[in-house]
Length: 80
Image (tube, rainbow, N blue to C red; front, side, top):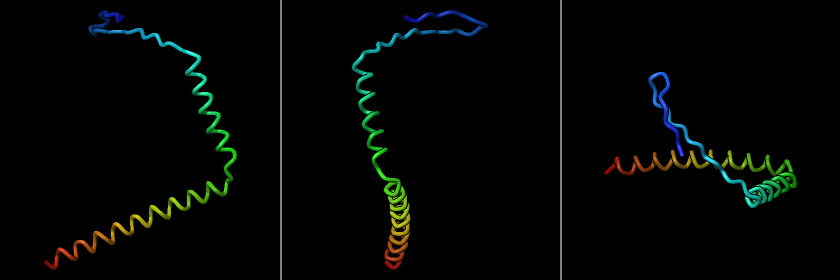
């Protein structure tokens, strides 16, 4: 339940929220974080580097193709 009172001309409403902690949530969080950490440790550093390089190349190619197709599209419709 909330509490309402006046302080220095301002109305203040304060709620007290009680959260319920169960063992199931802790188990799920522990399982997910343990799985992610074990996968992250087994992946080689070269794989991380390769992924970063491929993502950068893919983004650059996507940008260049978009600019080129926009240029072609404008040329085609400008002639009509």
